Length: 69
Figure (spheres, rainbow, N blue to C red):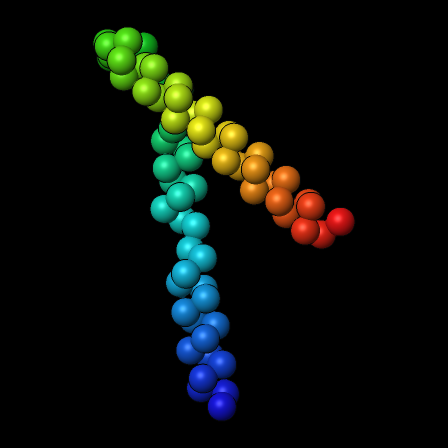
């Protein structure tokens, strides 16, 4: 029985791994090099991605608060 609980904990831990997600957030929100020239399309795409990430996080926070209150 104990072995089954350990396997369940491991699978939950692996399911909710956030390391890759946080590294992506850091890459998206870091400052760009001023030396590299980028097209307007690429800059707009990154801007939209930032907005989408912020809105998603706000939605998750809202749902968590709504669940607990």
